[in-house]
Image 1 (cartoon, helix red, strand yellow):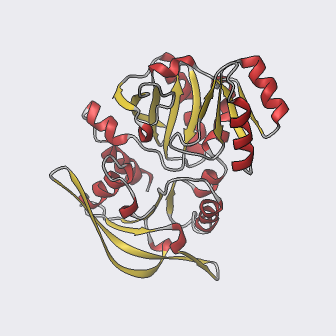
Image 2 (cartoon, rainbow, N blue to C red):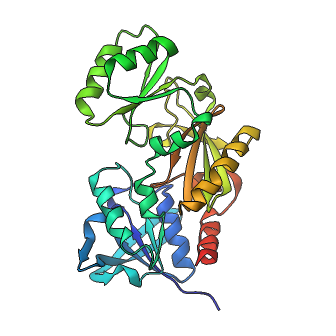
Image 3 (tube, helix red, strand yellow):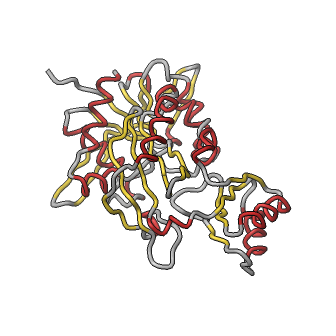
Length: 315
């Protein structure tokens, strides 16, 4: 007899998303195919009252027809979130106070229902900071707002990458070459537009050969793709034109995954995407990893099936 689960997905409104290739859509679609009840809500639908956590949820209907993603919602109702078997946190960053507040609220019920990923450790593992726990795999890295420190770092490393500490999708990432006349302007703009520190790294020339996205589920590698930057572009994110191609893991990739896997499992970081450029680990994405549909297409796999099989084992 198949186990019937009740699933809630905390995510952005589907009408605001590009559903073609969307990872959350295919996870939800597979859940529905299995006969699970799937509900939708956004972080703003969360309610805390007298130590109980509720949300304004809607039943979510998902279908694939002629290769097109179809969705619709049911009526809104207030439901106690601890009544769900699984809650997926799948809204996109920015990793802002709204996101952090949602993790605090969900923390209240993390002992009563399975929340993926664990909200406490999501909150404490922003991708560009969490990765520093594995600094031996990272390129030269500086996190600061101090202009003089950034200038010293640039003098030492020549070509650098500057990016927001809590950005996503390649947004706001700048490649600054040695003797770049725009460096001071870029630095001024970062200081004006970012209240927090930002991250500066030595440039990795191998990025021209791609940025490898590796997906781990419950600490186990389930697939990978290499994302090749578009012409005259140093960012390989698919949001900005990066082209996914088939790839495999080399010895260094496997060492990285073997090293971080027990840390991910111990923190309840069930569904994770890591980024590797050349021999360097650059990010550990625990908020809303993407890329499984591209991996499926290139490798004829069904990672969404692996995902729910592993969830059932965990339950």
